[in-house]
Image (tube, rainbow, N blue to C red):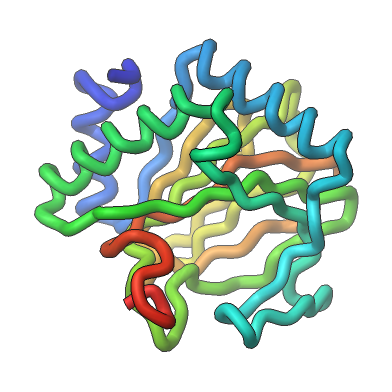
Length: 209
């Protein structure tokens, strides 16, 4: 099991998630997992496989650059075998969170995301209006050498708004249906691995229900 999913740091992260609906965990991936994810990101980017991200559900998806202007690539466990250590860790993460929070987490979906200079994502919730499958959102940042002024921070909109720096190997975990958040404009290219832990396996039923 990853070190970040056990011990005092993990217990404190769970307490914060329970109290505020979001939590921040630094040094999230073991180095071997981090290396494999970064290598896959490089491969995907060099292959031109990052596509303009859209908003909405399935057939209603649309690219609206005034709301969202990042580029993404969906991950597939069966074909991207070099990421198996990541997917195995996600299975452990699902089990830990399901046990700690008394929730059903039977699936997941993840993508690589790149925000070019100037890209952003306006304030939104991750849960769809007609589908309640996304339970928890997880973002892991892949920005080596990020410094204040580089942009791309995650802003949490709540009673006491918080701006979270996208530091290298930092994870942000939050409730998909309740945490209003946005990605502030990137002043340097910003990378992340972003996904959702699902109530039911991805694709079950017409709307994943």
